Image (cartoon, rainbow, N blue to C red):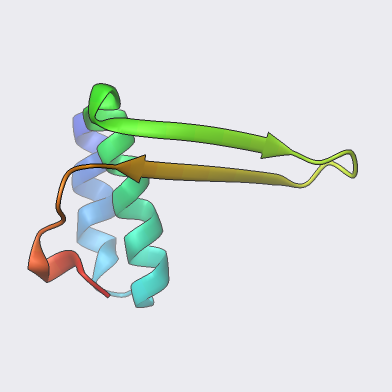
Length: 65
């Protein structure tokens, strides 16, 4: 299922703004290799959420925005 979702998202990436592509790629890396990513989920009392993904892996130059 993750492979199918990855292929589908990759096909759509070129049509999205750079910041959206960057966020989707970070999430895809989390799904593909959870051990390579740190994830922090913050939920405020008002209900807004923020997911922060971080990795020590250097991104490919083609994915820098």
